[in-house]
Length: 119
Image (cartoon, rainbow, N blue to C red; front, side):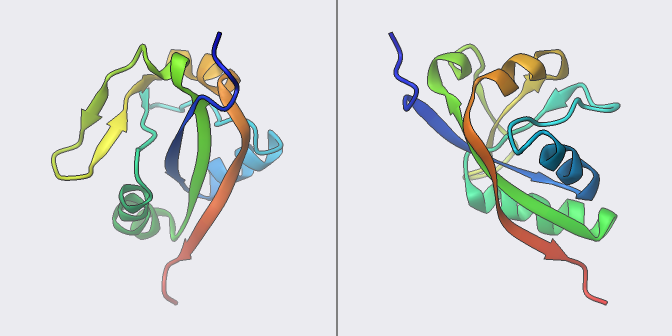
């Protein structure tokens, strides 16, 4: 039997709308994917920071980097994919699986960094 601390730490960068929905969940769940077929949590903080700086801040002006733990046994059904470079590893979780993914988050979703566009 798996222990609750048998987890993998993941990271995800989100914009202000997703942040508000995470907050509304009590920092326990990621919101449903709107118009996106996949949820892409990443394996390193560095990759999450890159996503925040290069994609979210230029587009939405504000980005938050989250850190959270997911049960290893649950994640074992998904392969780790590489987004095209060293240390750019991520999971591709089908949007339809997100409710079950959220049930396998152990502890709160933490906001570890926040960025705002200059000006």
